Image: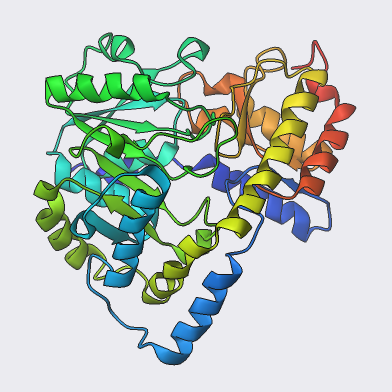
Length: 386
């Protein structure tokens, strides 16, 4: 039988932890969910009202494969309002979540066997989608010295043949960001070597000291992936978008027609209103900021002193090597003994993630506070534990 790349896909460990946490809850035990990157807030009120209106007044059927015109126009206007960047509506493509955007990006920009550079630690679905498409994820070990982000100097250490670079700023799982000048250096590096630049910007809007830079401020040749799931608090609506170079629009449209027909119609009509919900959305970000402050203050007091900078997104990536060299077993024990559910770093870094854990602070402040209280006397993070 011919090799089937789909059989080589690793599990998404965060979802395995969620399953175990849900089973614990079903058994009547308390769980403090810090394992998944899902906002604890509902979709904005105007989005819910728009969805109700669409159900009553719109035909919820197929739409154009690239998305409805009012939503594509609203996304283009968002780039002008938020970043000061003019993006023609024709380069905006609405997708079935950011996952659909990654699939369309990889299929349109690369050939079978191409290598694409990914920072490690990084979002596991990148490498799993690439593997399923007979593309080659090229892991780039990144450390505290570069804020867990790639640099041209680090990429130069690779010996693999590469055709592209995918970056995320803010990043999952570290929450770290790439500064404007550092992003410009990466863009120039890729342009000089003919590498396709892909920028995952799904955590834009959720930042704490400085706003994130969109790569579209620097080039029209990059592919940008974004989503309504994180800042807009619409995970289950399965809606995202891409901004792509003009040269890729036709190819992506044909792929989208055949793979998805169209993004979810109801979600599209509702999402038009999302850009008019800034006050509500910024209130959510203030909640994440409170949760972040609690973890950055209290986790070091518990012994978890080496934390990624958490510039954006809603994650704290903690070095737990003082306590374990098996983050999977560590997280399982923590869930069983304290009810705190977190994700092993092995999900995000197959080589060094055994020594790291990701805590999501996307939930309520009450959840974060109670989780910290549960951990205060847990022997698992006392010196000398294993």
